[in-house]
Image 1 (cartoon, rainbow, N blue to C red):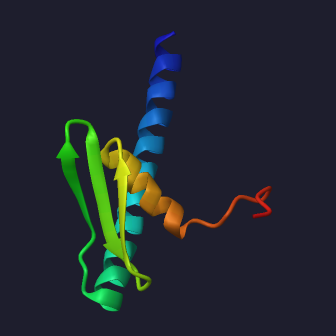
Image 2: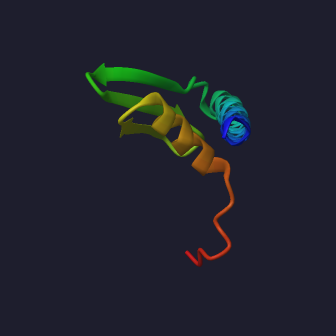
Length: 90
């Protein structure tokens, strides 16, 4: 049982590291594009308890998106640069 738990823990740790690296790359790309296009530095700021605001500008105007936490904001940034899924026709 210990070996199974250790393997599962290793898998989860690898997946978490991969996701964090992907989020960091997407954030760096957003930062690069936003600064080049408009001079605006993207930010994630806390508004009130439990609500954050992601602000960025990538050439088509300032976007301000309210999210529940920083991870959700970083996931949104990843979704900006990811390809649509294979089954997605829209």
